[in-house]
Amino acid sequence: MSTTATRAGLPTAEQHRSGSRPKRHYGTHIFLTAMAVMWLIPLGWALLTALRPIASTNEHGYFSVAGDFNFDNFVQAWTQGGIAKYFWNSVIISVPAVLLVLFLSSMMAFAVSRVSWKFNVTLLIMFTAGNLLPPQVLAAPLFEMAKHFEVPYAFSDSGNMLNTYIVVIAVNTAFQMGFCTFVLSNYMKALSQDLTEAALVDGAGIWRQYREIIMPLCRPAFAALGTLEVIFIYNDYFWPLIFIQSGDRLPVTTAINNLQGEFLNDYNLLAAGAVITVIPTLIVYLLLQRQFVAGLTLGSSKG
Amino acid sequence: MSTTARDLVPPESRAPSGAQAKGVKSGKVRRLSKRDKVVLSLMVGIPTLIQLVFVWLPTLMSIALSFMRWNGLALTDIRPAGLGNYQYISQDYPPFWPAMQHNLLWLAFLALVATPLGLLLAVLLDQQIRGSKIYQSIFFAPVMLSLALVGIIWQLFYQRDNGLLNFLLGTSGTPQAVDWFGDSSVNIWAALIAATWRHAGYVMLLYLAGLKGVDPSLKEAAAIDGANAVQTFFRVVFPAMRPINIVIVVITIIESLRAFDVVYVINRGTNGLELISALVIQNLVGEGQVIGVGSALAVVLLVISLVPIVFYLSRTFGKENKA
Image (cartoon, rainbow over all chains, first blue to last red; front, side, top):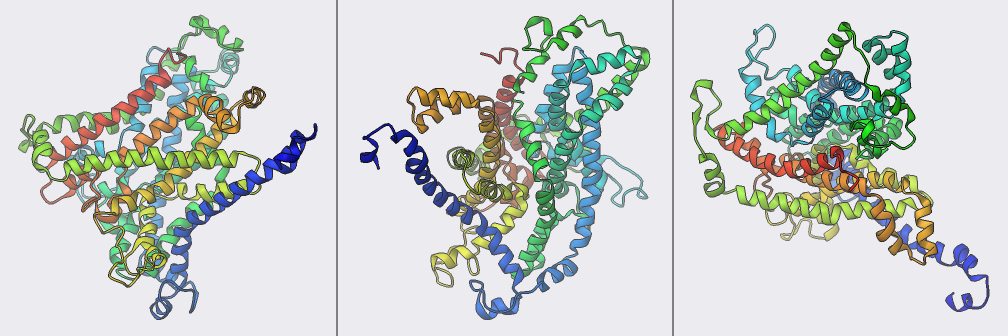
């Protein structure tokens, strides 16, 4: 290639079109395909194991595609593992938590970004820093706070806040609020100040400015953050682990760990359980991938 | 967009580019009615109160409890311990130093392997390459999964008798078969690979967004000056992504300090997988409930975490972030 290129004025154009470009991309494709295959292997292996009945794997071994393929493991994991209940627990925790996070952080973001006030930066720093702490730093005091916060037995069968959904929701809300406030306040700052100025002239109070002007404009940010937070809170393993002691109240992400013990040595069932818990995230991934990605990058591009 | 953080300083002190609207508001003659003040204080007060009670108060309590001796039962049993807990973890608590090493290793691995891999994937996928979207979806998929689930999925892959890896290595069923998550000489590396699987996709995603934000004329200018692709990337494109680079550095450090779920799912962070975060929880939920020791470990974690947090906050909110 390079010898012909020395001849005339063609080379640059030719090199661009047929020479270097496709060549470089061949290597890239080989590399990317190899990586992609490696990336999919763990998931593929789990799926393969889940689809094969234990009789087939016992007979032909796990490293094989012989024998039957069916959904029996999924059905069994669903009924025997009580996964439906765990899913419902996840819903009970994540729906209120996400709504609360968005509601509270939108108010906070509005206040620090649209109203000039002495402590704006201080508060925003406090919120952002709180979100960056490792949750384990807070775990012991939060656990003890919940344990020593006594409530009537009619309200909680432990006599305190342990083993209740409320404490998990509250802590998740508090912990996620920092991130959402940070992202939303940047988003709101980018909205023109004229919007609320005009409303102010018309005599609209703070609440109306927030509710009727800023909120509707933030819809794209809410869509992105909402998707992200649903996944974050659904995927949260830690807080239920700390606060919830009775196994049947765990959300699915924390509960699958118990399936390891329950489905001892039945890796087909365990794999099926794992695959089932991926399904909600998979649905979000397929339907709302753009929102999720927007949410993640929204948070980072404002550095 | 990154300039928005600078709007925190009063508009008079600098000239915002093309933001005339903001110049207008600088008078600060906004008079708030009494009702507005009440509404505003609620809008600020409620979230702030929640944040203080559930995040900052526990942080302070962790610090306080780290100087106490307590079994977690009656509040009247709390006894001062001075530096006893710190002395204990640094001298008499066997898993402490291995855990510190593992956290460091975790950071080094994410920083030297996972993050560069994510960057490489982003750079390759940023070219006009066929199927780029499909590749992106594949590399990004693990980011959607919880770390707990990542642990379980890799457990299936790494098992001694029926795991895929031992089949692929031809060691399955033989005495040479390795229990990748159970063998304390290799399990930290196995866990790091599982963590990389997720982290690299995340980094890739952030860098893809960052690369799109780089002004294409910079690349053209570099090409005209005779820079090749590698030079253009390292001398022009990479420095131009500074805000993203800072975010990635912070995320990488914080992720390595927060690493918990994977090891806890595998074996609760014991037998070769000790991490500070896991030790905190072991001391909290264990039989003895040694709150003081757990809190001292939490404070160690806190102090280390404050380094990247302060770095990030000063970059983001610092007034001289132009420097």
